[in-house]
Image 1 (cartoon, chains in turn orange, red):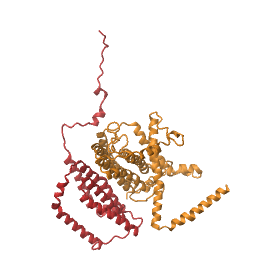
Image 2 (cartoon, rainbow over the protein chains, first blue to last red):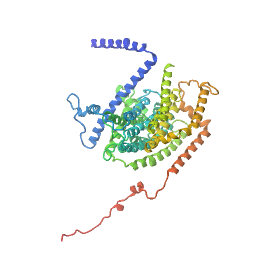
Image 3 (cartoon, rainbow over the protein chains, first blue to last red):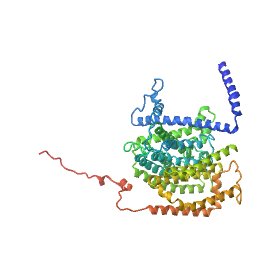
Image 4 (cartoon, each protein chain N blue to C red):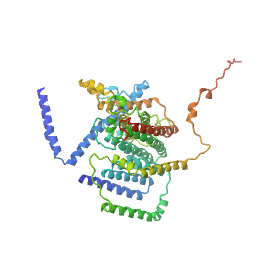
Length: 380
Length: 196
């Protein structure tokens, strides 16, 4: 053990002497940029891995719901590991496929469109807090920023359909873009309720506004229950997931706006869909289910505060955030295994004639709650 | 200061370039997309001016909503660019008038005639909160009047497009849900028939 300790000492010394010293020799602006890039990598790599393994989870979960095995062949080093290597194999396959650009298509826009749908889904993570103060950019208008970025995601759909130079893709674009734009309104109204209740646009402050002495009971999903349900369902519709997946519609139209895409260009649309799912799950858990807050009342957390592992598990922390996100992601998969696809007029009716009126009425009620001081903000 | 200058010139360059492309490019869809790029770089410059609320609202309202609907229309219509070009001279005086006004205003701002340059805000300055406070106290009447005008515009837009056509086929979900078994099937009792 002695040599291990000395080598660790030596390594830390090496790190301090060389890396830190050289790092401090760089200009200050460059240091900031390097630190931010490192933080982005720390967020992005697990996120992209989650996206990859969400595809496997989807096939496994739906498989077990339909009493099948799901993918169970591809593993590592000759071991199948219940299909654990499947996402890697899929990614490698898609990377080596040819990207076919249709005749008469606008080449630059055709290749930009997938990036435009993936970009906003990733950029929104900049303002999402993972724990108390653990956030890449502490922005005051974070909620607006997220809203703005999710509204930009529709450009990927529109440009993809138009630049493909195909009437089928264009019609698919019209369908899914109209759907996304419609549900954005209900989503925006639901978020207005959240910001009224929290009295802030900062996501960290929104989570902290849900902190109470009784754990789960203090979270916003109870006073804002209709908004919570509407936000999540609109999120499912925004991501074009079943039962709102008329854009995909594999049984009748074989994908709408990305019908002409192949290879990695198609895969990026696929990644964007899953990244958006994770984003919606994260936002719902931050805004309605108290993010990293523990479900247990404060008195219980105080009870176990001295027990080493239990206090960490029971107390607030990033693991609660991940648990809540996983729950919503499971809901996404569950919906897909359960519900038949909506008809197009039903989708539009639900968005415009059911969700928007309910959110507006509930916003009035939230205003009354705020004036009554039920959110701890006072009448001011 | 150096870094901010670089950011400003990069986004200002993109903005001027894309604004020029909006009026010179032949394809109307591409022109609309360049307008989106102009809005984006404009938002970035506003962000640099610490007007984060306005910057994000610009992206949210213009990029996220107005331009999406604009693109919808432009994609669906078959716009004759040549005919639109023909009206160029007709609109030129208006364009020049707008240009002169903008130039005078920019001159006033840059040389600080009647307009003082805003100082740097404190680190905990909340742009959204300050705007809200001003809008709901000092400017509450203009703000409410603007809201009412918008509401009237919404209702007017709906009223203009609302056409009641008698013979359209549409479903009534309430009736569909309210259906009972007896409305759809009729149970018939009959004796078994013998083969003759």
